[in-house]
Image (cartoon, rainbow, N blue to C red; front, top):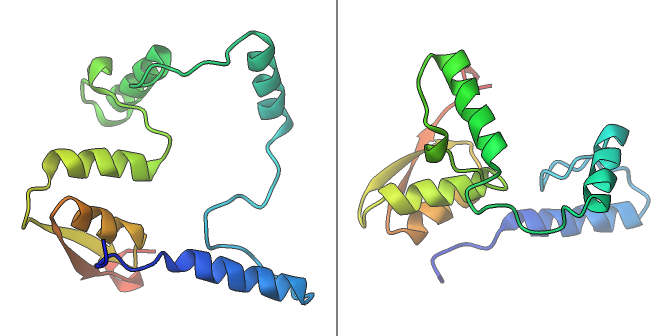
Length: 144
């Protein structure tokens, strides 16, 4: 664990908050938090769901209807047949990446990661015994 560097984003966030406290205007781009309120239709749907008693955990793999919709999307978009039973819904990209890395990375495996890229990804690779290898990319590489 000592080899895993601190998550610098929290240091950047603290500095941004200090600047805001001094009256400076800051555009936050450090933690992926939206800078707008939830749209009203989303708020109404959430209130309706709570009122209808939808207050428990969903199935671990995700709601069956959502898994079916994702499988259908892949069929329509990429012309591949995906069994909904093979679809795993996660609460974000990091959770999905952790599952994939846990399944695929063997100790000593090299894992290519774009640079620039999300800093936590290299730590996740290391967590599963892999060696993160930076692959520099830029506008000239079609990475924009």
